[in-house]
Image 1 (cartoon, rainbow, N blue to C red):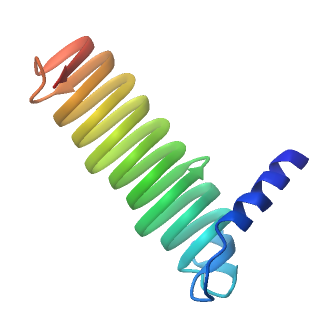
Image 2 (image 1 turned 90 degrees about the horizontal axis):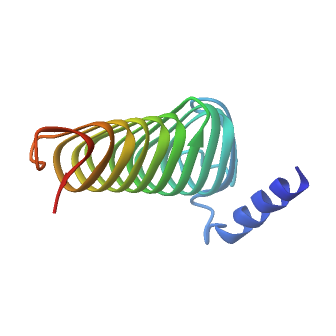
Length: 172
């Protein structure tokens, strides 16, 4: 536990904002019921911790128990035990349910949804992306358009080698 606390403090210190316009540390109870140092709860460059959090922009780490939501842009890592929502992710999303409009990086969860494009890795029981550029690794994988590989029990890619395949599908 001490190592985790030291890691969180070091991570917060590493991404401290250069100005008071963004929050370096945000503690959230629910949605926008939160406190931040400095007092900006919408734009965080640092660490966002809580039960459920909603942030406009995030550069750093967002870790919440129920849901973590970033509305516009996220650079870094967002983790939630239950639901993880973001519009644009550059980094990683970890949660039981991870959902983003666009992601560059990794989605790791039981259900991973990219409503538009995913570049990188989706790893979970069910993975879905409109436009996938990279690897989907799961029990069921779906992509409307893929430039990469799907590995799983059922792989569906409308432009893949075949529209539906077992074990492996894709297109390069």
